Image 1 (tube, rainbow, N blue to C red):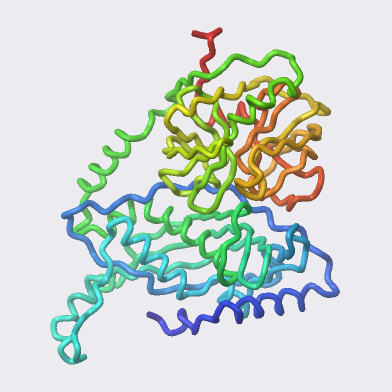
Image 2 (image 1 turned 90 degrees about the horizontal axis):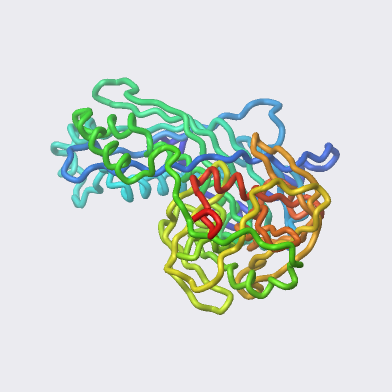
Length: 458
């Protein structure tokens, strides 16, 4: 490892104090900046290195950071239950190690390689250095060196306590793969990564959330066919052809429609007449980063939620309002739209009716979900539709209806109990009244390639 890329990692309390002292000292006497806008990023599936194929051990050797003079803060530091503003987060030589510790990102990169079956250097069990060096020269030349430049960082972090955090982070990384025996770069690319958690606080030092964004960007590196080619020995196009065929066989074809057996549009009865049945269709979803909400749209166990609720998990736990638990399999995701489709066994609850027509500003709307976890499942709140906004080239419904962490993935209903939107948290509003946002359900259905079939259409 290069000595300049692996300084001593601060402990949790030291990292926390370092970031707080640097942030708060720079916040006095300057104009307050808004929270960083965290862009949506598509999370791709890592390509797995084929069993039995020769490959070159690979490891992260060099980590460099870019500090642009005059770039300003990279986000907002918040604190307390409602994440009130504390100051700006600065990205410089003093804070960067606290935000993204080299030791952590190096270890997580190795873990990703191992999970995807890529070869990594094998630690030597030799007891004497002179014995370990015999024949080791060729092994070192076979190893590929990976370097990464952290080009962009954006993060909003909320300190719930000394070692408990929620928030979001975005990274843009430039990668190079270096072959020592050729003395040249054999592959390079740029990837992005995003991580968001509002539903569950992450314990540990402040850097946990930005590190998770790094992991997402590194996973997107492992999804690059060029990286797989660089690691294979020799570069073997048949490896890629086999993987590409497997991906094509398992993935739905472009524009392939999945038909779901749903219910007809609700009548114009007041929501109060239907609320008992509607509540049974709302569930708490437990993904790999905490819990959120979801709701059934099909009689055979089809459920909608947020992509950030399921995370990278293939299987999730779904808990109904009655307490019954089901296993759900993530069938489709649309990361840029932050929606996911989950399949469980038939839950025995009536699915929610979907409204595909555009709602009007000023309509009464209602949010159903599990704010603050399963203890408050099927909580109903009321507001009005305040507007339709475009954020990061994506359309959202805006409402003052009350939502909290845990509502993510739950339905936004009109006065008849029809779903018009899906709750999304972490778009920069930070719980400010009247500034809550929802994915239009028609857009979610389109992005997931769904077709809702009702009795009238059969």
